[in-house]
Length: 225
Image 1 (cartoon, rainbow, N blue to C red):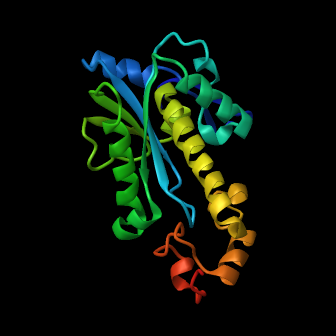
Image 2: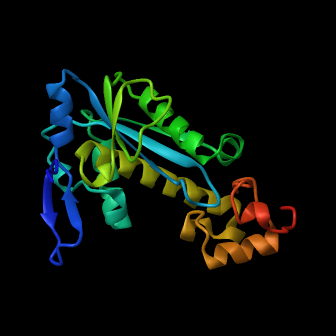
Image 3: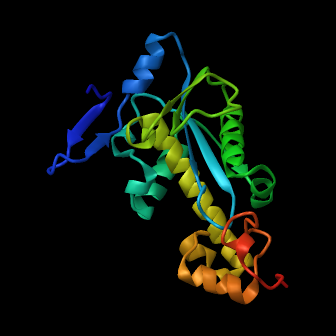
């Protein structure tokens, strides 16, 4: 089997570990595309808060690119540092797309995720002509794209997009904690932890909760006061 990118076999040789590089971007350029954006999302699984997507067009020579990786593989401190480095670089064109919990309930999470990605791509300062997207194909993107399984660990552009999506969403949930401290959003970011579920049973869902999601939709809950 042939793999794109620099790929290292794990010691037990049962799992393949990826190191993000420019392989997919170079393939797109060889096909004639000039502005290639990486796209990724954060927040599909939580019971509360938005789903957020990032879209990024990177310069090739920025000195911080060697530290980029899938945001899930990085510490919070490292993600924040990379976010600041990326956001402060004038040559990095980036955007985030946000879809609220109310929109998620109306659309369903798959359509909401695709909408967040479309909003992120449309928000770039200069239009991209091609996208590399983490995961599966996306309906509704305004430009052609290639879907890459585990793309956030294989493409530097997608890895950068994962940083913007994750950090933006985490910051939003920390701000939500100030409005609804009883749910402790700053700790679990809306995921279904035991403390979150206990708070739901006690207080009921707040406006940030996804009421269409199980187990919220299946619980007998008080009405948020």
